[in-house]
Image: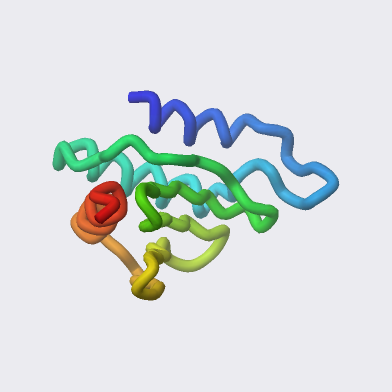
Length: 112
């Protein structure tokens, strides 16, 4: 699947650039792959809008449409969480499991 390949390719990026880390942390990478494989097994993995890392080594996968966004964040330490936002507000869901990621990504891609 292209999403798994994109996340795996992040692990082979240069370690850092002038802004900080580019390559994801091993901790974030292993959590991310586990969640993506669970989503694939559930047939609930939607194509994301963006897959990237931040300068902390976190992996960020986002689904966005029509002013709604859900972003899975697999941090360099700690547990993955989902940040979500829309015109009605925003929030986070901590220590997420695959079911919650599937629900939030569908919500974001609905766009309504």
